[in-house]
Image (tube, rainbow, N blue to C red):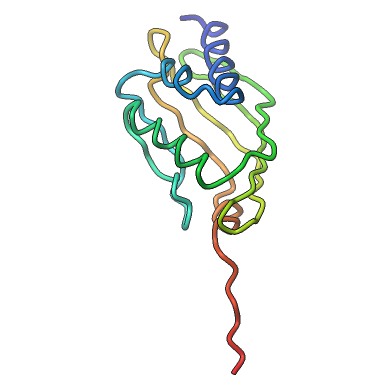
Length: 140
């Protein structure tokens, strides 16, 4: 595929995500896709997910633990088989009530019209803080 087709594929993935159509998004991935987020303390969807089934579990976990306040892909840069997307998000963590917000970068790798790799770069400290329950101070 050419760079324009790769960019359109990734844009379609974000469209499916915004519509809550996870199955259509999963259909854009290879069977052995690698989906990577950085390790983050107290964040149940952090880490590496392998294969469509696990990526489906990733989206299920994501929906269980936080609500989208804002998720905005802002810029798409395609070169060769990679599409880099710059954006921002704001999520409300259900267990803590805290807002998780950060700019992000997503790197997508496409081969033969399917996504083979996804990697997210994000403010890990901000996300982890939002997922961490407030500590109470014991004053005896």
